[in-house]
Length: 77
Image 1 (cartoon, rainbow, N blue to C red):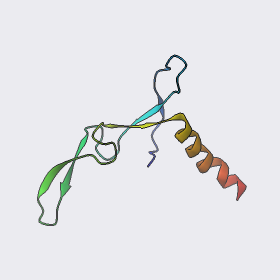
Image 2: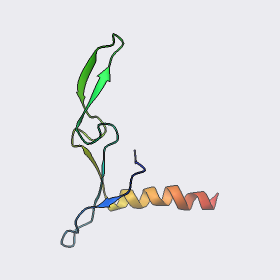
Image 3: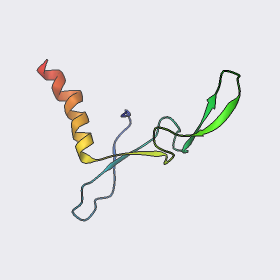
Image 4: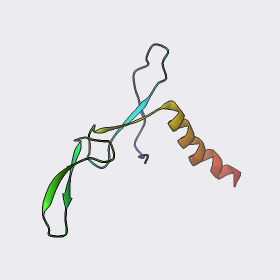
């Protein structure tokens, strides 16, 4: 699931593929979230979106696919 936040490029590695990061919208960067069950009890759970890292990482290929599917495929239809 991609967010609408601005892409933040990771530092350019020495000839390696550059990755992109965004703060997780589910846990707001904490790595955990509060879940309320049917009995109105609140529990702390690890974030399932970012796997408790607080950031979502994408490779260059995933970013390219997202841009293509979002902008260019709409023009073809």
